[in-house]
Image (cartoon, rainbow, N blue to C red; front, side, top):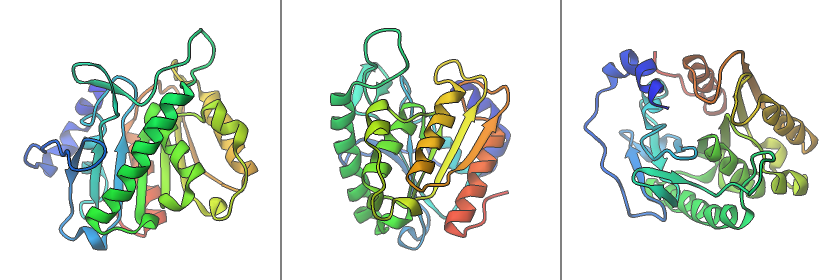
Length: 244
């Protein structure tokens, strides 16, 4: 997503910060941008996609809320220098699905990370929000739909429900109150737009009415319009006003 840096550059100039240092005190490595009073504000955790790293989504915080605390996590499985993933893709040329054993192991690490991050920054689970792109969106679904008490809501950008999760998804107490944002490009060549509508349909069946956004002509990426919509969603679920 190198183009994203170009897209947001004029906006980020007003949010200049010292280069963040990679943190290693929690179960997954991460970058952090803490607000002035973390315990009084929500915590947003970014989960990158396949082949990226913790730097990929971190810059989005400059378009959101300056008082929030933002963590951007490095997925646990290394591909090569500077590139990571949450899980391997299943073999074959079928739909994009993750190897379940990889997903389960990464989910346990992620769940522990979210729990410990909440304790570190003194933020209750209901005020922790996951923002995931692609594989990161798939992991956001995994955590929130299986453990809805662990987070306050999720944003799934260009993602999908892994088949294993979709097949076992069932109503559980509190699940229908989980805020979910779905954003997806109609021209996505990696995870087709139908993956987003399929996920939305599955959520409706368990009582979740997602804030669904389609972006005509957008491929597998994040647009400025989508970030603006994400900010509006965060305003709605947290009651906070976004940066201008």
